[in-house]
Length: 84
Image (cartoon, rainbow, N blue to C red; front, side):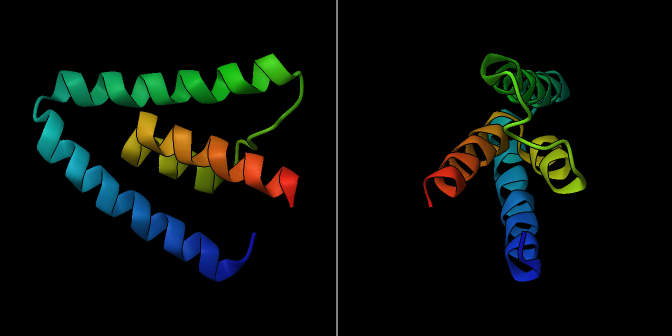
């Protein structure tokens, strides 16, 4: 992945994480959101039988900071990268 794209995604994750913290407000909801994000990433990898979404530092940071939203962004971005 390109360096500037990685920086952009990290900044996007931080902003989205801040917005989600303001929306969810309780630690229980935030933890549940992060857990569901990880479950989504693992489920997509298990459904397709290969590592569609790599378990690298960028995907872990995005999923940790943004939860389900970050997992959806990772799934869409990896789907777009297979098309092009």
